[in-house]
Image (tube, rainbow, N blue to C red; front, side):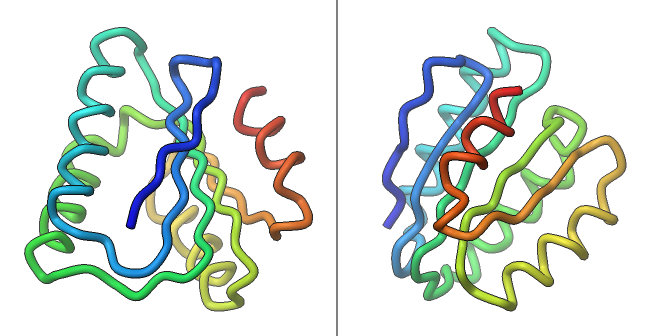
Length: 119
């Protein structure tokens, strides 16, 4: 499930992930990003990941395709999670895409993450 987290800043898209990401939910996030890209040169992503149980192969392929096509449209990503494997993934992913600052925060640091993504 994907639940939107509102931000006043139009260039920030916030969401909370719980459980499995469904195809239609991913499509809604992509539509929102596409709309925001017509209004802003670069986007920022704030994601709280509580309990990630994966996604379908189709959704995974869409995610990869969108990421490869649009990675230059993002300049910051804040990932909030207490999962150790996600902290390692964030460090790895931050090296894959030059020009995007990717930072991991714990749930205790949630407010710091929100300030960072806005700044």
